[in-house]
Image: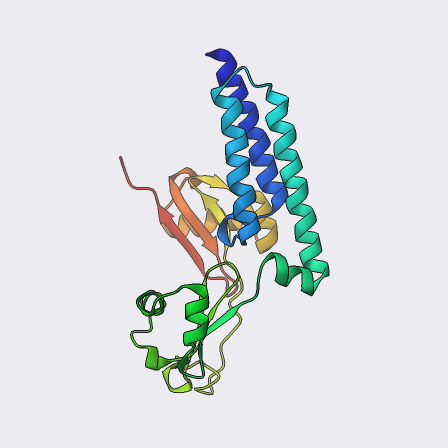
Length: 225
């Protein structure tokens, strides 16, 4: 039992490191070859976990080899447009200038019901609202609506928007983030004064607090037990 636990923890750490090496985009937006590698890594990690008769290094070496292959293919994709089209494929235009591309739907074996369902999932109730629908290489459907169906922007309304920037977290679950205090160019004394002005004496009573680019200070207290 102890050996199985140790082998499982080792393989977990190895797979976690491999996922970090493969990049943050792997889980969110996987290409077909990336999905295959993920499935194979999961299988290779599961075998040594369940069977102590399989040498642990066999699984580790195989996983490392797959990660090396994935990184190599990703580099090739970056360097060569032709290789990228072969490995990852090319986007497919399913709706072109408001017209459904029937041949492309048949080639990809996508029914009209599936297309309509995906368009509704993108908050467009009707195909008539869509100028272009593009099936990306990762399987996601990108929608470009017709001009009269697009949400107006501040530029369309001839309005100027101020710079928003990113809010900087100062306190999370009662702990002050001193690195973020430096990024926000504020001191701990300033933070404590802001809390005091809102009736909070101890930062440990704060669930979450941040400051934005306009110097707006937000704070939420923890709920009393």
